[in-house]
Length: 217
Length: 217
Image (cartoon, rainbow over all chains, first blue to last red; front, side, top):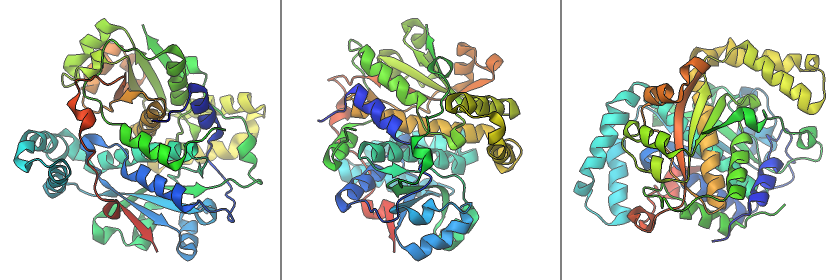
């Protein structure tokens, strides 16, 4: 497997920034985009439950319709591919069983052999502690997917801009999500930075490493 | 900047898995670990607020003490570097002002020029909608950092295992977090998979792409 060197990784992460202005004339090539769709599919999630659905919006009219509900951020319309991260709401036993059926199918093992795993998921996410805030739990998994997506894009030299700043209710309405048991929690435009984006060259602002990381001992 | 090809990226993501058994004899070299600490520092967060602190635990006695509060998962003790992701609890105006002071310092601009940005953060995270669940909001940011961390590790050929499965109250107590206004929300062992980990060779279970991604139009 081809790996990055430590220096290449840090360079990549320093190159990434929340892109404020995308170049609307630049589109992500199909092969690159296909890899980023795989990155979404392969995102890690707790138990592997994948409590999500990703909407990839290339239609410009639809994106323009979302702009006013996105704190008027033009990246929504000007990027190459716009991704909306939605969660499956009110996760319950059928979703766990669908997942177990998928494990059984992919790994060629009887679903009965997964009884202990089923019990563990049910007693935690579906009926246990995390069930009290199961939608928040699902949303958190989507944040893992977002973190993975932005970093993957950067390794391909593709720009992104993470977005919490939109009206989820309006997004849900426009995309027809409630009737499907889904709800938008995050969005992420992807594409290429514009030469006009002055934020691209500003120094990245982070607290000093000594403040952010504590080594024990 | 050196980038991965789309194929290399997908190979890297397929290589990654939630490592169940680490080889306790293999340690992450200093240069690689330094890059992963940079990856934590450079994690994206909403507004760039970085509402977190990362604890890197190499001390074996301390890790053994955490194992029973980690659903007895041996990865906590057997990995090379164990990271606990903690959030700053009950974020309030002083944290926003500390962040603005840091922007001012790094970018060499007067803090007064950031008044509009300050107002935006306060009206959203500190006094607005998100303030009602500010700790959940901070925790979500930590999930971005986790997603970024796992993917970065994979690009260096380093294994990880995301963990929600631990007792945050016990972690907080053992690490002395409450008196510092911090709380553990996630953990992630990092290191190298053991040859004995049968999960390493199992096919990855994901829903088919057509179920996970919907393209509009």
